[in-house]
Amino acid sequence: MKKNATVAVLLTVSLLTACSGNNSSTGASPNGEAMNAAPMKLEVMQEGTITSADGPGFPKDDFVKNELNKKLNIDLRMTLEATDFPTKLSARMAGANAPDVMLILKDQVQKFAQSGVLLDMGPYLDKLADYKKFVGVDELKKGFVSGKQFALPKAPPLLNGTYWIRKDWLDKLKLAAPTTVDELYNVAKAFTENDPDDNGKKDTLGISGTGMDTFAPVFGAYGISQSTISLSVSALTDGKIVNGFYDPAMKDALAEVKKFVDAGVVDPEFLSNKGNTSKDKAFQGKVGIIYDGWAGIIKDAAVKIWKDANPNADWVQLPAPKGPKGLQFAGINDLGASGYLVALPKSLEKQPEKLNKIIELLNYVSTTEGNRLVDYGLKDVHYKVEGDKITITDQGKKENGYTFVYQFTGRPELSYLQTKFPAQASYIDFEAKLPRLPVVDKLVDLPSGYNKADADRFVQEEVTKFIYGKTPIADYSKFLATLDGTFNYKLYTDAVAKQAKDLGLTK
Image (cartoon, rainbow, N blue to C red; front, side, top):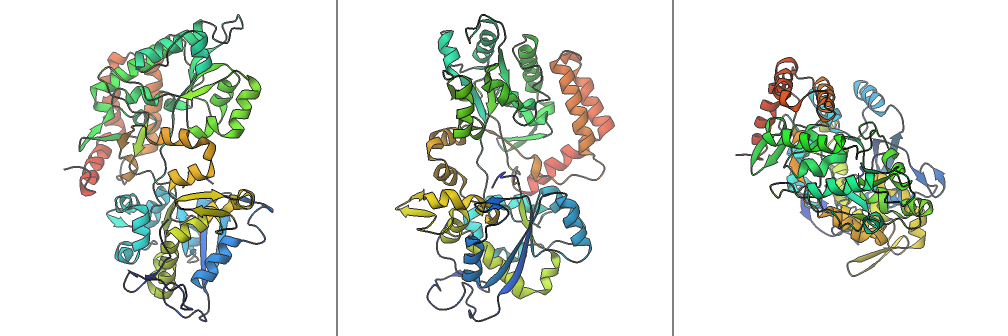
Protein backbone atom coordinates (compact mmCIF):
# COMPACT_ATOMS: atom_id res chain seq x y z
CA MET A 1 0.00 0.00 0.00
CA LYS A 2 1.35 3.31 -0.92
CA LYS A 3 2.24 5.31 2.13
CA ASN A 4 2.09 7.58 -0.21
CA ALA A 5 2.13 7.25 1.91
CA THR A 6 -0.41 9.55 4.05
CA VAL A 7 -4.04 15.79 15.88
CA ALA A 8 -6.42 17.95 18.02
CA VAL A 9 -8.49 17.32 21.23
CA LEU A 10 -10.98 14.89 22.49
CA LEU A 11 -13.60 14.57 19.79
CA THR A 12 -16.86 15.56 20.06
CA VAL A 13 -19.05 16.67 17.56
CA SER A 14 -22.76 16.95 17.79
CA LEU A 15 -23.43 15.66 14.31
CA LEU A 16 -26.60 17.67 14.05
CA THR A 17 -25.02 21.01 15.00
CA ALA A 18 -21.28 20.53 14.32
CA CYS A 19 -20.53 21.99 17.75
CA SER A 20 -17.68 20.60 19.83
CA GLY A 21 -18.07 19.21 23.32
CA ASN A 22 -16.51 16.72 25.74
CA ASN A 23 -18.56 13.67 26.62
CA SER A 24 -15.73 11.58 27.96
CA SER A 25 -17.43 11.00 31.30
CA THR A 26 -21.10 10.97 30.37
CA GLY A 27 -21.55 7.37 29.33
CA ALA A 28 -22.30 8.55 25.81
CA SER A 29 -20.41 8.26 22.56
CA PRO A 30 -18.93 11.46 21.15
CA ASN A 31 -22.11 12.20 19.20
CA GLY A 32 -24.20 12.01 22.34
CA GLU A 33 -25.90 8.66 21.73
CA ALA A 34 -26.45 6.26 24.59
CA MET A 35 -23.66 3.72 24.82
CA ASN A 36 -26.13 0.89 25.29
CA ALA A 37 -27.29 1.38 21.70
CA ALA A 38 -26.26 -1.45 19.36
CA PRO A 39 -22.85 -0.77 17.76
CA MET A 40 -23.10 0.54 14.21
CA LYS A 41 -21.52 -1.82 11.71
CA LEU A 42 -19.13 -0.02 9.35
CA GLU A 43 -16.92 -1.43 6.61
CA VAL A 44 -13.85 0.39 5.31
CA MET A 45 -12.32 -0.95 2.09
CA GLN A 46 -8.89 -0.02 0.78
CA GLU A 47 -5.98 -1.36 -1.21
CA GLY A 48 -2.92 -2.97 0.32
CA THR A 49 -1.55 -5.47 2.80
CA ILE A 50 -0.11 -5.14 6.27
CA THR A 51 2.14 -7.05 8.60
CA SER A 52 1.71 -6.78 12.35
CA ALA A 53 3.83 -8.03 15.21
CA ASP A 54 1.87 -11.28 14.90
CA GLY A 55 2.76 -11.71 11.22
CA PRO A 56 0.85 -10.97 8.00
CA GLY A 57 -2.51 -9.27 8.54
CA PHE A 58 -3.99 -7.52 11.55
CA PRO A 59 -2.76 -8.46 15.03
CA LYS A 60 -4.78 -10.81 17.18
CA ASP A 61 -5.34 -7.95 19.59
CA ASP A 62 -6.11 -5.07 17.22
CA PHE A 63 -5.82 -2.32 19.80
CA VAL A 64 -6.65 0.46 17.34
CA LYS A 65 -9.89 -1.11 16.15
CA ASN A 66 -10.81 -2.10 19.71
CA GLU A 67 -10.35 1.48 20.89
CA LEU A 68 -12.30 2.96 17.97
CA ASN A 69 -15.13 0.48 18.51
CA LYS A 70 -15.30 1.31 22.22
CA LYS A 71 -14.97 5.05 21.81
CA LEU A 72 -17.48 5.45 18.99
CA ASN A 73 -19.82 2.52 19.64
CA ILE A 74 -19.13 0.97 16.26
CA ASP A 75 -18.34 -2.49 14.92
CA LEU A 76 -15.58 -1.70 12.42
CA ARG A 77 -14.62 -4.11 9.67
CA MET A 78 -11.47 -3.46 7.66
CA THR A 79 -11.32 -4.97 4.16
CA LEU A 80 -7.88 -4.82 2.55
CA GLU A 81 -7.41 -6.03 -1.00
CA ALA A 82 -3.84 -6.78 -2.04
CA THR A 83 -4.55 -7.56 -5.71
CA ASP A 84 -6.89 -6.19 -8.37
CA PHE A 85 -8.45 -3.73 -5.95
CA PRO A 86 -10.05 -1.42 -8.58
CA THR A 87 -11.81 -4.34 -10.29
CA LYS A 88 -13.07 -5.81 -7.04
CA LEU A 89 -14.34 -2.47 -5.82
CA SER A 90 -16.03 -1.72 -9.16
CA ALA A 91 -17.81 -5.07 -9.00
CA ARG A 92 -19.11 -4.30 -5.53
CA MET A 93 -20.28 -0.84 -6.55
CA ALA A 94 -22.06 -2.25 -9.60
CA GLY A 95 -23.67 -4.95 -7.49
CA ALA A 96 -25.16 -2.53 -4.95
CA ASN A 97 -22.84 -3.97 -2.31
CA ALA A 98 -20.67 -0.93 -1.72
CA PRO A 99 -18.46 -0.64 1.37
CA ASP A 100 -19.48 2.15 3.73
CA VAL A 101 -16.14 3.92 3.33
CA MET A 102 -13.61 3.46 0.55
CA LEU A 103 -10.12 4.88 0.12
CA ILE A 104 -9.53 5.33 -3.59
CA LEU A 105 -7.38 7.28 -6.05
CA LYS A 106 -8.55 10.35 -7.94
CA ASP A 107 -9.17 8.53 -11.22
CA GLN A 108 -11.49 6.11 -9.42
CA VAL A 109 -13.26 9.01 -7.74
CA GLN A 110 -13.81 10.63 -11.11
CA LYS A 111 -15.11 7.38 -12.65
CA PHE A 112 -17.53 6.61 -9.81
CA ALA A 113 -18.71 10.23 -9.58
CA GLN A 114 -19.51 10.31 -13.28
CA SER A 115 -21.42 7.03 -12.83
CA GLY A 116 -23.56 8.62 -10.13
CA VAL A 117 -22.67 6.16 -7.37
CA LEU A 118 -20.77 8.46 -4.99
CA LEU A 119 -22.18 10.72 -2.29
CA ASP A 120 -21.58 14.44 -2.74
CA MET A 121 -20.02 15.36 0.62
CA GLY A 122 -20.48 19.10 0.08
CA PRO A 123 -23.75 19.33 2.05
CA TYR A 124 -22.11 17.57 5.02
CA LEU A 125 -18.92 19.60 5.32
CA ASP A 126 -20.35 21.72 8.15
CA LYS A 127 -20.52 18.56 10.24
CA LEU A 128 -16.87 17.77 9.56
CA ALA A 129 -15.39 20.57 11.65
CA ASP A 130 -12.57 18.54 13.21
CA TYR A 131 -11.71 16.99 9.86
CA LYS A 132 -11.53 20.37 8.11
CA LYS A 133 -9.39 21.86 10.87
CA PHE A 134 -6.97 18.93 10.66
CA VAL A 135 -6.68 18.65 6.90
CA GLY A 136 -7.01 22.33 5.98
CA VAL A 137 -9.81 23.93 4.00
CA ASP A 138 -7.52 24.60 1.03
CA GLU A 139 -6.97 20.86 0.65
CA LEU A 140 -10.65 20.13 0.03
CA LYS A 141 -10.42 21.03 -3.66
CA LYS A 142 -8.39 17.86 -4.21
CA GLY A 143 -11.61 15.89 -3.81
CA PHE A 144 -13.60 17.91 -6.36
CA VAL A 145 -15.03 16.35 -9.49
CA SER A 146 -17.12 18.57 -11.76
CA GLY A 147 -17.19 21.17 -9.00
CA LYS A 148 -18.63 18.88 -6.33
CA GLN A 149 -17.01 17.40 -3.21
CA PHE A 150 -17.16 13.72 -4.16
CA ALA A 151 -14.17 12.76 -2.00
CA LEU A 152 -12.34 13.91 1.11
CA PRO A 153 -8.55 14.27 0.84
CA LYS A 154 -6.20 13.30 3.60
CA ALA A 155 -3.89 15.77 5.34
CA PRO A 156 -1.25 16.95 2.84
CA PRO A 157 1.78 14.74 2.28
CA LEU A 158 5.30 15.88 3.04
CA LEU A 159 7.25 16.93 -0.03
CA ASN A 160 10.64 15.32 -0.38
CA GLY A 161 13.36 14.56 -2.88
CA THR A 162 16.59 16.41 -3.66
CA TYR A 163 20.07 15.75 -4.96
CA TRP A 164 22.34 13.70 -2.70
CA ILE A 165 26.08 13.77 -3.33
CA ARG A 166 29.14 11.81 -2.23
CA LYS A 167 30.92 14.34 -0.01
CA ASP A 168 33.92 12.04 0.27
CA TRP A 169 34.27 12.21 -3.53
CA LEU A 170 34.10 16.00 -3.40
CA ASP A 171 36.82 16.01 -0.76
CA LYS A 172 38.97 13.59 -2.74
CA LEU A 173 38.82 15.83 -5.83
CA LYS A 174 39.06 19.04 -3.74
CA LEU A 175 35.72 20.30 -5.06
CA ALA A 176 33.08 22.42 -3.34
CA ALA A 177 29.46 21.29 -3.22
CA PRO A 178 27.71 22.62 -6.36
CA THR A 179 25.25 25.50 -5.91
CA THR A 180 24.37 26.25 -9.55
CA VAL A 181 23.46 24.13 -12.57
CA ASP A 182 26.82 24.94 -14.16
CA GLU A 183 28.65 23.82 -11.03
CA LEU A 184 26.51 20.66 -10.92
CA TYR A 185 27.60 19.87 -14.47
CA ASN A 186 31.27 20.47 -13.65
CA VAL A 187 31.13 18.23 -10.56
CA ALA A 188 29.29 15.48 -12.48
CA LYS A 189 31.98 15.68 -15.16
CA ALA A 190 34.75 15.44 -12.56
CA PHE A 191 33.06 12.46 -10.90
CA THR A 192 32.97 10.74 -14.29
CA GLU A 193 36.48 11.51 -15.49
CA ASN A 194 38.75 12.04 -12.46
CA ASP A 195 38.62 8.71 -10.60
CA PRO A 196 36.90 9.90 -7.40
CA ASP A 197 36.95 6.39 -5.88
CA ASP A 198 40.72 6.25 -6.43
CA ASN A 199 40.73 2.75 -7.94
CA GLY A 200 42.68 3.66 -11.05
CA LYS A 201 39.74 2.93 -13.35
CA LYS A 202 37.30 5.12 -15.24
CA ASP A 203 34.24 3.33 -13.88
CA THR A 204 32.19 6.05 -12.19
CA LEU A 205 29.41 8.34 -13.36
CA GLY A 206 28.18 11.72 -12.24
CA ILE A 207 24.39 11.44 -11.94
CA SER A 208 21.63 8.85 -11.77
CA GLY A 209 18.00 8.74 -10.76
CA THR A 210 14.66 7.33 -11.82
CA GLY A 211 13.19 8.68 -15.03
CA MET A 212 13.02 12.39 -15.73
CA ASP A 213 12.87 13.07 -11.99
CA THR A 214 16.66 12.66 -12.22
CA PHE A 215 16.72 16.21 -13.54
CA ALA A 216 13.87 17.69 -11.50
CA PRO A 217 16.12 20.36 -9.91
CA VAL A 218 17.63 21.23 -13.31
CA PHE A 219 14.21 21.89 -14.78
CA GLY A 220 13.34 23.72 -11.57
CA ALA A 221 16.35 25.97 -12.09
CA TYR A 222 14.63 27.16 -15.29
CA GLY A 223 11.27 27.62 -13.56
CA ILE A 224 9.85 24.59 -15.35
CA SER A 225 8.30 21.41 -14.02
CA GLN A 226 10.02 18.22 -15.08
CA SER A 227 6.57 16.65 -14.79
CA THR A 228 5.55 18.44 -17.91
CA ILE A 229 7.78 15.81 -19.43
CA SER A 230 6.86 12.90 -17.24
CA LEU A 231 3.22 13.50 -17.70
CA SER A 232 2.12 16.63 -15.92
CA VAL A 233 1.19 19.70 -17.87
CA SER A 234 0.73 22.97 -16.07
CA ALA A 235 2.56 25.04 -13.51
CA LEU A 236 0.98 27.69 -11.34
CA THR A 237 3.21 30.73 -10.86
CA ASP A 238 2.30 34.27 -9.84
CA GLY A 239 -1.40 33.50 -10.06
CA LYS A 240 -1.19 32.54 -13.72
CA ILE A 241 -1.31 29.18 -15.42
CA VAL A 242 1.93 28.64 -17.28
CA ASN A 243 1.97 25.75 -19.68
CA GLY A 244 5.47 24.37 -19.50
CA PHE A 245 5.46 23.07 -23.05
CA TYR A 246 4.91 26.58 -24.42
CA ASP A 247 7.30 28.36 -22.10
CA PRO A 248 10.53 29.33 -23.97
CA ALA A 249 12.45 28.13 -20.90
CA MET A 250 11.46 24.55 -21.75
CA LYS A 251 13.77 24.46 -24.74
CA ASP A 252 16.57 25.88 -22.60
CA ALA A 253 15.98 23.24 -19.92
CA LEU A 254 15.96 20.46 -22.51
CA ALA A 255 19.20 21.79 -23.97
CA GLU A 256 20.72 21.78 -20.46
CA VAL A 257 19.75 18.16 -19.85
CA LYS A 258 21.09 17.26 -23.29
CA LYS A 259 24.42 18.84 -22.29
CA PHE A 260 24.69 16.43 -19.35
CA VAL A 261 23.72 13.46 -21.53
CA ASP A 262 26.11 14.42 -24.35
CA ALA A 263 29.00 14.67 -21.89
CA GLY A 264 28.46 11.07 -20.81
CA VAL A 265 28.12 12.02 -17.13
CA VAL A 266 24.62 10.54 -16.73
CA ASP A 267 23.67 6.93 -16.03
CA PRO A 268 22.70 5.77 -19.56
CA GLU A 269 19.81 3.80 -18.06
CA PHE A 270 18.31 6.67 -16.05
CA LEU A 271 15.10 6.79 -18.07
CA SER A 272 14.48 3.06 -17.61
CA ASN A 273 15.58 2.74 -13.98
CA LYS A 274 12.87 1.27 -11.76
CA GLY A 275 12.50 0.89 -8.02
CA ASN A 276 15.87 0.77 -6.30
CA THR A 277 17.95 0.39 -9.48
CA SER A 278 19.53 3.85 -9.35
CA LYS A 279 20.15 3.59 -5.61
CA ASP A 280 21.82 0.22 -6.05
CA LYS A 281 24.25 1.79 -8.52
CA ALA A 282 24.92 4.69 -6.19
CA PHE A 283 25.39 2.51 -3.11
CA GLN A 284 27.77 0.25 -5.03
CA GLY A 285 29.99 3.26 -5.71
CA LYS A 286 29.20 3.66 -9.41
CA VAL A 287 27.47 7.07 -9.18
CA GLY A 288 28.26 10.21 -7.16
CA ILE A 289 25.01 12.23 -7.40
CA ILE A 290 21.48 10.87 -7.16
CA TYR A 291 18.01 12.39 -6.96
CA ASP A 292 16.06 10.69 -4.19
CA GLY A 293 14.17 11.27 -0.96
CA TRP A 294 15.60 11.09 2.56
CA ALA A 295 13.95 7.70 3.22
CA GLY A 296 15.78 6.08 0.32
CA ILE A 297 19.21 7.29 1.37
CA ILE A 298 19.46 7.97 5.07
CA LYS A 299 17.17 5.52 6.85
CA ASP A 300 19.18 3.20 9.06
CA ALA A 301 18.75 0.21 6.74
CA ALA A 302 19.90 2.22 3.70
CA VAL A 303 22.91 3.64 5.53
CA LYS A 304 23.97 0.13 6.50
CA ILE A 305 23.91 -0.93 2.83
CA TRP A 306 26.14 1.86 1.56
CA LYS A 307 28.42 1.82 4.60
CA ASP A 308 28.90 -1.95 4.24
CA ALA A 309 29.79 -1.44 0.57
CA ASN A 310 32.17 1.43 1.34
CA PRO A 311 32.84 2.53 4.94
CA ASN A 312 34.23 5.84 3.69
CA ALA A 313 31.10 6.80 1.75
CA ASP A 314 29.40 9.99 2.95
CA TRP A 315 26.12 10.92 1.27
CA VAL A 316 24.85 14.45 2.00
CA GLN A 317 21.89 16.50 0.77
CA LEU A 318 22.21 19.40 -1.66
CA PRO A 319 19.94 22.44 -1.91
CA ALA A 320 18.32 22.97 -5.31
CA PRO A 321 20.89 24.39 -7.76
CA LYS A 322 20.30 27.90 -9.08
CA GLY A 323 19.63 28.48 -12.76
CA PRO A 324 20.83 31.28 -15.03
CA LYS A 325 18.14 33.65 -13.70
CA GLY A 326 18.59 32.67 -10.06
CA LEU A 327 15.58 30.35 -9.94
CA GLN A 328 15.76 27.20 -7.85
CA PHE A 329 13.15 24.51 -7.23
CA ALA A 330 14.07 21.05 -5.94
CA GLY A 331 11.05 19.49 -7.61
CA ILE A 332 7.32 20.03 -7.85
CA ASN A 333 4.45 20.61 -5.46
CA ASP A 334 1.44 19.11 -7.22
CA LEU A 335 -1.47 21.01 -5.70
CA GLY A 336 -3.79 18.16 -6.60
CA ALA A 337 -1.64 15.29 -5.33
CA SER A 338 -3.62 13.43 -2.72
CA GLY A 339 -2.85 9.74 -2.73
CA TYR A 340 -5.92 7.92 -1.48
CA LEU A 341 -9.11 9.89 -0.86
CA VAL A 342 -12.09 9.01 1.31
CA ALA A 343 -15.27 8.43 -0.69
CA LEU A 344 -18.72 7.27 0.39
CA PRO A 345 -21.44 5.53 -1.61
CA LYS A 346 -24.50 7.54 -2.63
CA SER A 347 -26.71 4.93 -0.94
CA LEU A 348 -25.81 6.48 2.43
CA GLU A 349 -28.21 9.33 1.65
CA LYS A 350 -30.95 6.94 2.78
CA GLN A 351 -29.03 5.81 5.88
CA PRO A 352 -28.59 9.02 7.91
CA GLU A 353 -27.65 7.25 11.15
CA LYS A 354 -24.84 5.35 9.48
CA LEU A 355 -23.71 8.46 7.61
CA ASN A 356 -23.56 10.42 10.86
CA LYS A 357 -21.54 7.66 12.45
CA ILE A 358 -19.04 7.74 9.56
CA ILE A 359 -18.75 11.51 9.96
CA GLU A 360 -18.13 10.95 13.65
CA LEU A 361 -15.37 8.47 12.83
CA LEU A 362 -13.68 10.83 10.34
CA ASN A 363 -13.84 13.67 12.85
CA TYR A 364 -12.45 11.57 15.67
CA VAL A 365 -9.38 10.33 13.81
CA SER A 366 -8.73 14.00 12.98
CA THR A 367 -8.53 15.11 16.63
CA THR A 368 -5.37 15.03 18.73
CA GLU A 369 -6.56 12.03 20.71
CA GLY A 370 -7.91 10.06 17.76
CA ASN A 371 -5.08 10.83 15.40
CA ARG A 372 -2.44 9.85 17.92
CA LEU A 373 -4.27 6.56 18.34
CA VAL A 374 -4.09 5.77 14.62
CA ASP A 375 -0.56 7.13 14.33
CA TYR A 376 1.13 5.56 17.34
CA GLY A 377 -1.29 3.32 19.27
CA LEU A 378 -2.32 3.52 22.92
CA LYS A 379 -1.06 6.35 25.08
CA ASP A 380 1.40 5.28 27.82
CA VAL A 381 1.58 1.85 26.18
CA HIS A 382 2.82 2.49 22.66
CA TYR A 383 3.84 6.12 23.09
CA LYS A 384 4.41 8.68 25.83
CA VAL A 385 3.84 12.44 25.82
CA GLU A 386 5.93 15.07 27.58
CA GLY A 387 4.71 18.53 26.67
CA ASP A 388 4.67 18.62 22.88
CA LYS A 389 7.17 15.78 22.55
CA ILE A 390 5.97 12.28 21.67
CA THR A 391 8.25 9.32 22.24
CA ILE A 392 7.46 5.87 20.89
CA THR A 393 8.01 3.14 23.46
CA ASP A 394 9.78 -0.14 22.78
CA GLN A 395 6.37 -1.83 22.75
CA GLY A 396 5.15 0.76 20.24
CA LYS A 397 8.13 0.14 17.97
CA LYS A 398 7.24 -3.53 17.99
CA GLU A 399 3.46 -3.33 17.69
CA ASN A 400 2.36 -0.14 15.91
CA GLY A 401 3.67 -0.89 12.41
CA TYR A 402 0.17 -1.65 11.10
CA THR A 403 -1.73 1.36 12.47
CA PHE A 404 -1.31 3.44 9.30
CA VAL A 405 -4.30 1.70 7.70
CA TYR A 406 -6.54 3.50 10.19
CA GLN A 407 -5.21 6.93 9.22
CA PHE A 408 -8.34 7.63 7.19
CA THR A 409 -7.79 11.40 7.19
CA GLY A 410 -4.00 11.26 7.18
CA ARG A 411 -1.48 12.43 9.74
CA PRO A 412 0.62 15.52 10.53
CA GLU A 413 3.37 14.28 8.27
CA LEU A 414 6.40 16.26 9.42
CA SER A 415 5.95 15.70 13.15
CA TYR A 416 4.87 12.10 12.54
CA LEU A 417 7.98 11.21 10.53
CA GLN A 418 10.30 13.02 12.89
CA THR A 419 8.73 11.11 15.79
CA LYS A 420 9.03 7.79 13.95
CA PHE A 421 12.56 8.49 12.74
CA PRO A 422 14.23 10.81 15.28
CA ALA A 423 17.72 10.05 13.98
CA GLN A 424 16.67 11.34 10.54
CA ALA A 425 14.70 14.37 11.78
CA SER A 426 17.10 17.00 10.40
CA TYR A 427 17.18 15.37 6.94
CA ILE A 428 13.38 15.22 6.84
CA ASP A 429 13.14 18.88 7.80
CA PHE A 430 15.75 19.88 5.18
CA GLU A 431 13.79 18.36 2.30
CA ALA A 432 10.43 19.57 3.61
CA LYS A 433 11.64 23.19 3.48
CA LEU A 434 13.12 23.14 -0.03
CA PRO A 435 11.32 25.35 -2.61
CA ARG A 436 9.15 23.42 -5.05
CA LEU A 437 7.31 24.54 -8.15
CA PRO A 438 3.51 24.36 -7.77
CA VAL A 439 1.65 22.47 -10.49
CA VAL A 440 -2.07 21.98 -10.90
CA ASP A 441 -2.34 18.85 -12.99
CA LYS A 442 -4.12 16.47 -10.66
CA LEU A 443 -6.81 19.01 -9.85
CA VAL A 444 -8.10 18.81 -13.41
CA ASP A 445 -10.98 16.66 -14.64
CA LEU A 446 -9.89 15.23 -17.99
CA PRO A 447 -12.09 16.61 -20.79
CA SER A 448 -13.97 14.32 -23.11
CA GLY A 449 -12.08 13.85 -26.38
CA TYR A 450 -8.61 14.09 -24.83
CA ASN A 451 -6.72 10.84 -24.32
CA LYS A 452 -4.08 11.73 -21.77
CA ALA A 453 -2.41 8.30 -21.86
CA ASP A 454 -1.77 8.57 -25.60
CA ALA A 455 -0.56 12.15 -25.32
CA ASP A 456 1.74 11.22 -22.45
CA ARG A 457 3.34 8.40 -24.44
CA PHE A 458 3.96 10.76 -27.33
CA VAL A 459 5.53 13.33 -25.02
CA GLN A 460 7.81 10.74 -23.43
CA GLU A 461 9.00 9.49 -26.79
CA GLU A 462 9.63 12.93 -28.24
CA VAL A 463 11.39 14.35 -25.21
CA THR A 464 13.70 11.35 -25.17
CA LYS A 465 14.58 12.12 -28.78
CA PHE A 466 15.36 15.73 -27.88
CA ILE A 467 17.72 14.97 -25.01
CA TYR A 468 19.50 12.22 -26.93
CA GLY A 469 19.88 14.33 -30.07
CA LYS A 470 17.73 12.16 -32.31
CA THR A 471 15.51 15.19 -32.97
CA PRO A 472 17.07 18.68 -33.00
CA ILE A 473 15.68 20.99 -30.34
CA ALA A 474 15.34 23.49 -33.21
CA ASP A 475 12.40 21.32 -34.36
CA TYR A 476 10.56 21.78 -31.06
CA SER A 477 7.72 23.71 -32.76
CA LYS A 478 6.91 20.62 -34.85
CA PHE A 479 6.50 18.63 -31.64
CA LEU A 480 3.99 21.20 -30.34
CA ALA A 481 2.10 21.20 -33.66
CA THR A 482 1.66 17.42 -33.50
CA LEU A 483 0.66 17.53 -29.84
CA ASP A 484 -2.01 20.11 -30.62
CA GLY A 485 -3.20 18.64 -33.89
CA THR A 486 -3.01 14.89 -33.42
CA PHE A 487 -3.65 14.64 -29.68
CA ASN A 488 -6.18 17.47 -29.13
CA TYR A 489 -3.90 18.99 -26.55
CA LYS A 490 -5.74 22.32 -26.61
CA LEU A 491 -8.79 20.60 -25.10
CA TYR A 492 -6.67 19.84 -22.07
CA THR A 493 -5.05 23.25 -21.77
CA ASP A 494 -8.46 24.92 -21.99
CA ALA A 495 -9.76 22.60 -19.27
CA VAL A 496 -6.77 23.43 -17.07
CA ALA A 497 -7.32 27.16 -17.47
CA LYS A 498 -11.06 27.01 -16.79
CA GLN A 499 -10.92 24.66 -13.83
CA ALA A 500 -8.02 26.49 -12.21
CA LYS A 501 -10.08 29.67 -12.34
CA ASP A 502 -13.19 27.90 -11.04
CA LEU A 503 -11.15 26.59 -8.09
CA GLY A 504 -9.94 30.10 -7.29
CA LEU A 505 -6.32 29.39 -8.20
CA THR A 506 -6.15 32.10 -10.85
CA LYS A 507 -7.92 35.37 -11.49
